[in-house]
Amino acid sequence: MFALVDCNNFYVSCERAFQPHLQGVPVVVLSNNDGNVISRSAEAKALGIPMGEPYFKVKPLMQQHGVRVFSSNYALYGDLSRRVMHYLGEAAPELEIYSIDEAFLGLHGMSRWQGDLVRYAARIRAEVLRRTRIPTCVGVAPTKTLAKLANRVAKKTPDLEGVCYLDCDEKRQWALEQISVDDVWGIGHQYATKLHAQGLPTAAHLSRVSEAWARKHLGGVVGARLVRELQGYPCHQLAPSEDGTLARQSICCSRTFGIPLSAYQDVLGAVGAFTSRTAEKLRRQGSAAHVLTVFLSKDRFGLEPPPYSASTVLTLPMATNDTSELLRYARAGLKRIWQPDTVYKKAGVVLDGLERAGQPQLALFSGQVHNEKRTALMAELDQLNKRFGMDTVRFATALLPTGQHVAPWVGKATWRSHAYTTRWDELWSLRI
DNA sequence: TCTGGGGTCCTAGGACCC
DNA sequence: TCTGGGGTCCTAGGACCC
Image (cartoon, rainbow, N blue to C red):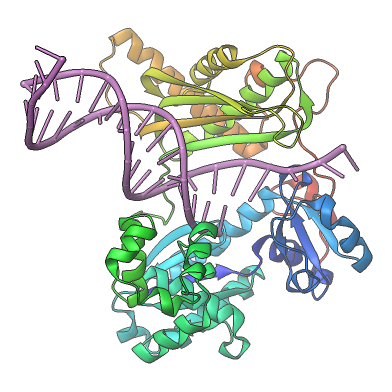
């Protein structure tokens, strides 16, 4: 048996957790660079503000209704997420942190000693709310796909009080009929259109298609597994992990620039900063990377013809998680794809080919001493930045030209709330 | 110029997720 | 004027091997 715990409108809930006067009023949170709506309160949704909509398109509507707008504040959301997940790890025998606001719990054999799983799930909701002020819904079912589906049913059926438990066939059938195929986990826009055209509008319809049909029309084995899961036969297990966090297979950092850039030094500064960030993530999960990709993008919405993006892949002679080494390759990659007199809107760095750091290498002795010193230096760097704040210590490539306080690539964040929980200097304005 | 089966590895692209 | 960021998995096809 699996449970899916999903935080309701997570980013909006995080803002409300520290500003209770935002309860009951329409609130939205915008993506990086204040681009799109990525989280809405129920009140904002009721006003007809679509998810993912560019801010400038819904701005008039929001101003008209006095919608409270926030820039995204990932320091805050990440911290609240850690608190929620920490509690879930204590409350369940197995935990898989699926995203910043969702986790699967493995409940095998739980009903014996926890009694009624509905009461158990209700207690989890109440406890998460008490500890973090984040509201959640819980779906409980024999497969992960059905747990996701049960969660959606819980969200849209107020009578269930946030918990939906599919403990028998009749209930499973009933739940499948409540949910449109568009809202099934694994059915995106393309497949949903296809399914509607075939006269299969609900999850119940989808659960009755043949395996051959699913294979043919829904992406091969992926579709076949999806249908089996809807029928109640588990095809996906929890990802194994000691603390619930997943070890990533690729690590990326990319940003749309606040303003278009065409000076090499500016873009190099951005690529340097993104590389540093990926290296930090890499070390945090104890990995080293073999492959580094650098990419640059032009304005997709502008008048320039495609291609909008150029990228280059560098294979490193030896896996590393050393920032300065990765910076060297990133710089070489940038030089390869750089075109003068071009206006760039976005850049990014991706690390692939990850392996465990500290694997014995076929290196000469002198090289190993060098590596050990490097590893110690990186650990020191991470410690300092953790203690005194991000970018307290950084590499020269990521430095700003003299006289500049903010890097030219940094995006807009006009309505960012304070980092209540992670920065001493922003704590002072806390109001509860 | 024609002739075969079976395997691996890599990459690009497509679909999906939050 | 203004359109996010970070991931996963699978498949098909090509290069190469015996």
